[in-house]
Length: 336
Image (cartoon, rainbow, N blue to C red; front, side, top):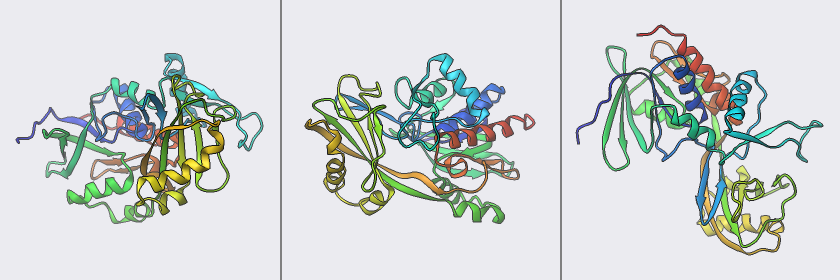
């Protein structure tokens, strides 16, 4: 099938997590042309919300916090627009008295991503197959929509915000060679894996306020009550995040062998109620345990940028700020 080629873009961004979306939104506000591609059916990355079995789950990031003025400006806008709300401010695991706000989307953690994507040229369900650099200094981005249609874009700048191993693999497939001095930091980035169980009950769970706990020891790192959170009013819905150790040691196990220990560990919080449904979601690149040691990557000679948690760190804020800072750099560049 012949590839369809939309008009050239100033910047193509691969990855519609919070880093890619805020990079794109920064460019949009500066009047720059940008297009965002993602293999998922919707935007958000780990800011993920899913409806199934009569329930709604936040099954990735459970909330986000703000420590920088750069992100606080956007958060103030999102609060005023009604995109987000404060879930809670204090928790038993806080190290400082008084706590600090934990924010969630009003319709789940994917709310901000969906609202940002609505304002952008966003192409979901599109797997980028190849990126190449032409002799005239432009990027050629070849992709395939789910359903079989081939697509292609030409752009001055390319930004990659997917998990770093995926981005490096994509560049390698296209024969793109990064400068030798950049490689050691990029290749040192490492991620941990995690398994997440999505569980519905036939009655309300028994979690203390605010509706989330961090159990001590294996195999759970978090239990979140999506009903008490206000996300799943009609059905008790729990998100069980495994520890990284459990995720690594059980990654290849059959689903029933992954679920059983997680359900048993969480049972004290089931309120005596019966499990109606349970399934596993795998997070292959759950969190970076080593970052590249910089806010983002920009290779001037290639017109190539990278941003995301591999640079900003595992918190939502780290990815967000990484994308915004790269967007600011690109917005200052001369127009074509």
